[in-house]
Length: 189
Image (tube, rainbow, N blue to C red; front, side, top):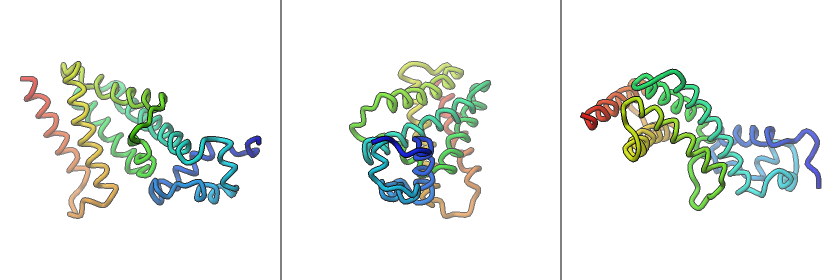
């Protein structure tokens, strides 16, 4: 069976992103996607292998977008300027695409080479920025884990409405990053 004319992976992924961002990743099913695209669910099998295949394609799309945002944010910057810039890009990505971001989080047992490469690319962006502090090797991986955990935790709590006190969230993340950066410097000394 050939794919429906006018229906391509880009159109499908855009529709899936719209559903995920509006209703959450769990709302992305073959039935909801087919309904949004005004097609029958079996037509989707011409493009990917069921819901697991869709989730992989959605994760790849999200990681590609996140990688691009982080790369653009890091270009031409170093040390604190680079950290603040990639942090802003990371938080902005989650704010714009909460459902797509959720799709980028690793699924247990997923060995897709494309996902592995994109994950490595993102780690590499962080470790390259950390080189400007003289942090390399295992220390760069540990520091990257800390920074990504800080950004993920903040963005995830914000996306789920976890910050109820009416204080500027941008000030909060800047303060957290400042404390993190002070910590980077104190460990090096």
